[in-house]
Length: 265
Image (cartoon, rainbow, N blue to C red):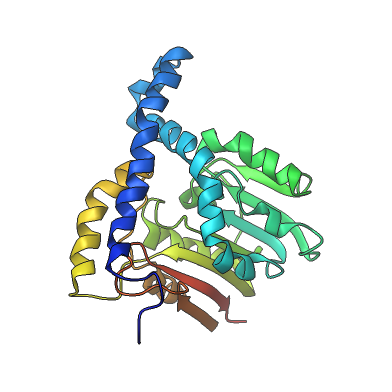
């Protein structure tokens, strides 16, 4: 299959550019914390990374959204319904797609965002999208939904994961824990980073090398996870419609899978 326009070897350099963006916000984060006397944040590596990523994402999030929009909009707009579980929504950059005018069947959305640095912007974007009354932020990890989150099995109509399974802890386990929350006939909408399918090619080794540094600069994001394989193994699916990211090929170091999975009734 021929490579699409713009998908040549130069695409191998794209993750280096993205890491430069992240590096730029490191000294800015240190300066912000010092000026505001938030010295306690320096005592925790995880807290500092959360603050660093929150400041990076406030700038880069909208740009990332614009780049991903052609793929994500058809997936999310008008497809969510009932009680929704929005995993790792960050600052809520996609919430405008869940506006009631486009998704009249949505009854409730639980936004599962463990990074407290994102909560203010997430709440503001929920209100801006007209979802203030039905959007509830749960500040725990996806692995804690049945304990701290209080969610029950077979209670969710739609699970939404957009570029978040790459950064949560123990994703294979969490995917298996999320599956029982989904009602029979419920759907999982997914757009995620995955390990390259071009095994034994140069990009496989390049992706491995990039991934040594990448997680430290993007708050734990791991671009080497076979998330699509884990989703398929999570349970019994009635219908699976997953495909590679549009225009992505053997020179993409940060490839995606996109589509839907429907739980067997």
